[in-house]
Length: 94
Image (tube, rainbow, N blue to C red):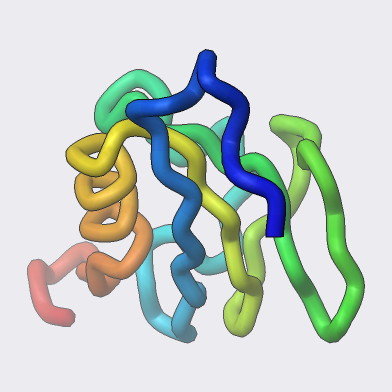
């Protein structure tokens, strides 16, 4: 495996799997406040054995997708928490 270029020496790449019932499932990347809240970016999606490299903001995130995240360790951890949060309905119940 190749390492990240020196320019990204403090960055990490990590994957998160999107589960059914999470707030991220069924949303477009641009609807997720990843960059503005966490600072992390989705740089690839793996779906049913197919890779989507550098997905567009209009890419749909579906349950079962594996998202490849890029950012600092803290940014990626914050993004993981955001992407795996359970959706809450209008009554406040999960």
